[in-house]
Length: 112
Length: 116
Figure 1 (tube, helix red, strand yellow):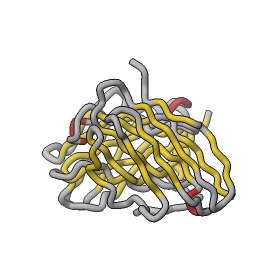
Figure 2 (cartoon, each protein chain N blue to C red; figure 1 turned 45 degrees about the horizontal axis):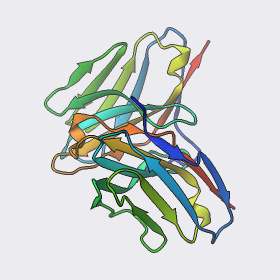
Figure 3 (cartoon, rainbow over the protein chains, first blue to last red; figure 1 turned 30 degrees about the horizontal axis):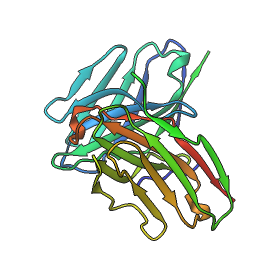
């Protein structure tokens, strides 16, 4: 699986700016994707999902973009707030299987 | 609605000792997952139950790890004997159905294990 040890990629953004977090997924047969947010000492929490028949999905302040050609997923957070500081993971599921494969996390730091 | 409960929250043991973790899923959830999350990495699935049957345990190190869900409700994960590389957070998650594409997987807070 993916491994970055203690050197988790970090994105630092100014409060109020937009954030873009990227994820390269591994399996071209994956057809369902989720972004999770994980705060320190807590389990992952669902943010937004997207199926492979879509290329964009919007939620409240968040947008997920899917590019199947290059197996790339991104999470956009509008007007980033201090409470958005966390580690963000993408996860993929391949149709016919019953599990998620989690990608490399990105730590988001919101600067006041 | 109560969430997924796990205990203990923290555990420190010496290598070669044994340890057990407990998980109580959300009421009515048939599917239960155990994940291992090493610091700085995404969760890795160890074992998945549907009721009291195992759906997937392909990444469970069966020489030292075992898990059970005897009555199809709560579950225990055991490590015997523990190794240094088992230091991680062990996450339990549950879902009302087997198909993960319905996005109904809820995670507990995890148990942080430190092996010295």
